[in-house]
Image: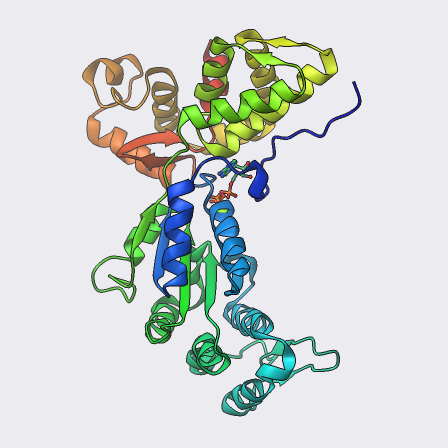
Length: 380
Ligand SMILES: Nc1ncnc2c1ncn2[C@@H]1O[C@H](COP(=O)(O)OP(=O)(O)OP(=O)(O)O)[C@@H](O)[C@H]1O
Ligand SMILES: [Mg+2]
């Protein structure tokens, strides 16, 4: 058989054709952004926020809405974030001829700290370069920019600020205030603030914080098993291969239905089947592939294991073996020598803040679903 590219992608934003389900979420996000709403999109890591936003923005672009996307965590500091924010907003507002005047005005307002490089019509914004430079005073002007551009340009905009929970690292409270104050004035600009640490995001949305009740919240769920089954079956079938029922169940439960990990395990299974030219795949094949993946990660897992306390290790073992529902029960606490329930709770919280665990629908789960596999294998 001629080579066929592996259709399962992970760690990248998935494109339109390989995008599984999320029909309702996508429609809602598109509608809200087109309406100029300020949407907060929350989920644990790797559930598919960035991918969802990407397809939504693409759809909006087709409707001639100008789109801008920034990942807050990519920037080294507040000044650089503001520069990129201004730059991308201006670029999206092009063509150059039309926005020139407002750009010039914007330049006048925040002077003398702003320069434009207009050589090729390519816009580059540079705020003052001094290391001690504090951009706080000009931040409101920068965040006002999309409003100005849409009002004067006769178009709408949709802006995504991804990894938004990182924003507080820039300048504690004042950056949240600056953004909130400006965006609430911008009727023609939809915003989606996407955040991967639900606990941090929820804190940000709590009473007495600037973003309290600033807009609708969307909690992104896992993608239902049936959609994955259909997608995975279809991909393997195109290659003349089948994955039996038991194998599919094993794959989905190993990955804990976390989109990233479903794709990761399916990706490995695809390569494995190619290598062995195996037409019929089952649970044993999925296990073999998982085992190889876990082995590949073991250096990292060992390191992690060394870094956590003895109590936390015992808690991880209990969670990996017994699951989250019984973790506080007396039987489990005795079996794994976990101590009192309050100690278990403390350990779980510590593991949550280390990003080993997170919470979904009230229960703790492993952010990396292969880690419990490694823990069980190790203790066996
Ligand atoms: N709708 C989808 N269809 C198919 N695969 C998906 C979908 N959503 C997410 N994935 C898979 O999950 C991976 C992670 O998705 P994405 O980066 O969008 O998640 P995220 O929530 O933004 O993660 P992070 O919090 O780490 O930024 C993707 O690379 C892809 O493999
Ligand atoms: Mg993301």
